[in-house]
Length: 211
Image 1 (cartoon, one colour):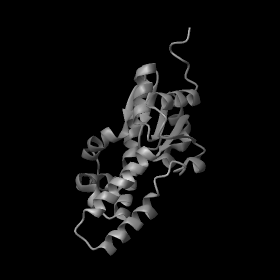
Image 2 (tube, one colour):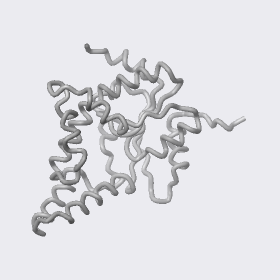
Image 3 (cartoon, rainbow, N blue to C red):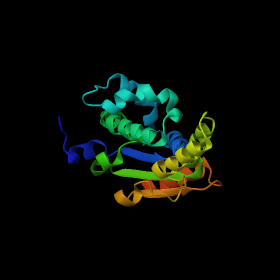
């Protein structure tokens, strides 16, 4: 069954998408405004249990690679991650439609196939920082460095890592230019509360403490 974009956009009109390195900002906004916070990463395993290999092959493979993700070659890890996100996005949308009907406002935080739902999104922001994406890159580099392979092979894999995943710099738009999503660059001196303030201002959320 296909649901028209205009119908989904209406049903998701009170859902606020926070992409990138925004988990603490999302939780802070949830507490501040009494918004329900849905972290997509917390529902991957549940959705994988309901996946069908014919319709969600990437999500069915999620259980196979997630336990030892950093042991994969970078290009394979990138492909698996993209396929997993692609496959669970419709399931996430089903969750959000139900939550949006129960709560005044809902925050959806973390990965989602933005290209697949962009026509149904009313509120969205991308938070970029060295802490989130760069930390992942460094973790993958460390994992490659600990493998029992030659230095030449390690160098090749690190090069593949940066080629496929990017360099972890916060100025990388990661789809923001293509889809016109506002990007908030979070430097090392920007606290979670300040990030939440920036997101709240972008979304036009009023100060709950204002008289």
